[in-house]
Length: 566
Image (tube, rainbow, N blue to C red; front, top):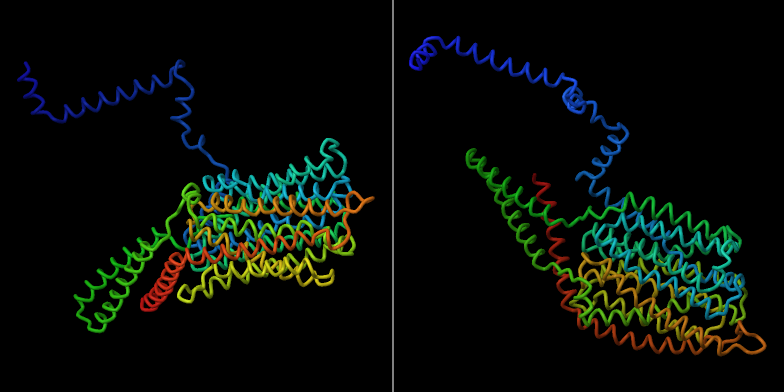
């Protein structure tokens, strides 16, 4: 029977095919009937009948995603870099409020009946917060500049809003210098976070050869903010604390938390190793293709042109390899802390910036002690802010333009110049009459701003940009420690020691600050010695950087020539 059935199938293949088709159709009918039974679940019917309608997306959301993808495209890399720089500058301006503390310190002293030491403690708390913003640095290093900007803006708004409530009397428990110090510490933390987010984004986005200028531009915006806030407090808000603090809260929240969160992009680097290697591969592939076409066409002129292109491409590839070899290693905070170079620059910042902050925080008291009036210091703060901005730009530009280790011109050389200027300024503050302080404030701002432009650039060059957020925060602790040691500790104690009874809070006469300025001048001389040691120890670093700069310029020339020939 089996043989007979096989013979019949071989003889009639059409019948066999028909039977198979009927069997498949019957199976499909059975499946459909199973789906149409009442016991079958509704989700199965929804998946089978309406697969498209269940996944419909919001058109507004789709448009936002489309705009985001376009903005993040490779063609807009350069645009994103400059937008991030501009927004970073605005974030810096919004985060520089602690430098205007001298403008509001007499009003705080009068409103809460504080001693000069307590006022200095509040000012020091702001500086400590700015330079001890470790949590914000961790957020920046691991979650990115945008997340850091969002958290910073939120904290900045909260700090100033709480301060305004304290001034208005809505928080009776906060009408003391301890609560005010906590609020100012939170404000300083938020400002430090915004500073870190803005400057890290710019350092990563722009090439190494422009690092000093970029840091100088960003730091200058941070410095000029005190002029904006001092002017606003004096002439717009007419020395009224509460509306001024609400203004600072809203400005910080909108600019730092809003614009910074959206536009602070640190993924627009001009030096992308992947792009370079990909470009080299594409160049070599195009050269091989071109050489094959040229050999088939036997065109003499084309062969010469291709030979030049091949030589240039080989040189470009060699330069890229050399730049990779000369790249500075990225050192984390633990490795940085075992480096002697870190402690040398730490001590320089401790003395120089600490001396500068002492003058800034006590400028209101200095003016009154030297025979001035309350409010006169506001003009000096504006002058200081403008010169501070100029100093950051000047030293940032000069340290890039004239970097030449063969002539012993490095970034540390310019740092030594700033230290020397600070030494002279501190000495002159002890002997200069009140009218001469205006000129001293200009010099103070230039050397103070120059130090703030040079030290972050040195940190990114010596220890690498990868962990710059945390490394810079640890380094900037020196400024806060110097502020506390010199402004709160030494200046406050010497001021109170020279208060003549029956007065208990205010001191009048040159003796109030004379000893402070002489001691600071002597300490700045010691900082100058540290700069000389650091100059000797970092010659190799700037020699390597100079070679990288020369190679980068040559690479740029070759790429331009290659584009012209293509």
